[in-house]
Amino acid sequence: MRTINDWYEKGGDLSKITLKPEAEDYLSGPLSYFDDEQKKRYIPYVIEPSAGIDRSTLAFLVDAYDEEEVRGETRNLLRFHPALAPIKAAVFPLVKKDGMPEIAQKIHNELKKYFMCFYDEKGAVGRRYRRQDEAGTPYCITVDGQTREDNTVTIRERDSMEQVRVSADQIKVYLREKLDI
Image (cartoon, rainbow, N blue to C red):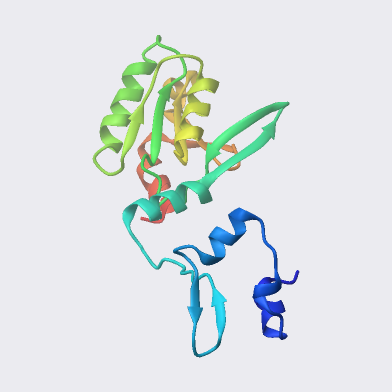
């Protein structure tokens, strides 16, 4: 694509060009500049080298945002690197009975000493997973019926949605390895 500057550099005369009024304002307006040495008119521009927290935050959000198709539904999520994720883990009881909330609260209270954690017992567990996916939480820990039998919990990874069983007393070690803290 040829520009006016290309045409001018090849000997073209800008005075013979008829431009639309908005283009004339642009070329002769406050943004245009005529370089007397090079006998060339141009619009100066700069790539702003600012590195403030607003721009960094926006860059991280834009980079992390993702949408994917899962079982016919669009899944929105933030794929923050675990080091950047504001919440490292969420703890859920599968249901609000059979002692599961008490076990989940105990796990949450232990983990919050080491990681930014979130506790949630409202709604279906699938919806809780989705809310945490949207918030960028890399790991969700679910206390279920098997937890009372063998003291293991389900840990779900946000990006792959893969679930593994981990002993409740090894959750902190597991998360430290995965979060690389």
